[in-house]
Image (cartoon, rainbow, N blue to C red):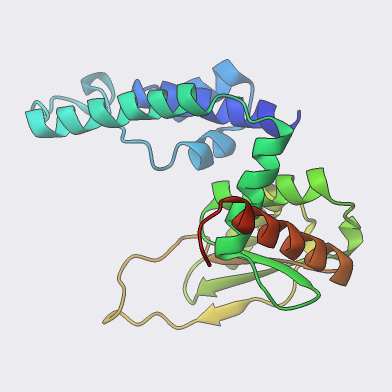
Length: 216
């Protein structure tokens, strides 16, 4: 299945989750792994039914209004964006790299904690450039105390890069005075050492920025 097909499945999973379907029910209906559904819909508000959790108080009207607005705007976004053609896909990837990618000459490097962003970048890189898969490298930044093995499996699935191409991880010491909530799977760095590819991306980025007509 191509990137666009997977995006369609992700949006279906998110819409079904917004209707309070269980992860297992969504996985069964879409024919995908439950872990994939959990990843795709992890930020979708979910209210367990009374049948599964017992009697509960009625949700606050403001909370219900918030959920309804989020669902409506998600649907509006899907309708407005539609399916990206190659030109739009190319431009979206360039803009994403301009904000989150490395500008160091010779290093195509992208870092993020959001799996959807990382999956998008990897699909974009493979779609528009000739990538030697053996030269892709992954490094995980993860707080101490979190499950490194689970993080490795998670990011390998997201990036499509096998575990033997992962570099040694960086284990950060959490500072509770700065942050309490940690990302369960940390931050991932996708690295592809190729001077020509990096310079080609930078050329596209400069072309995209100049095409807007906005003064520098």
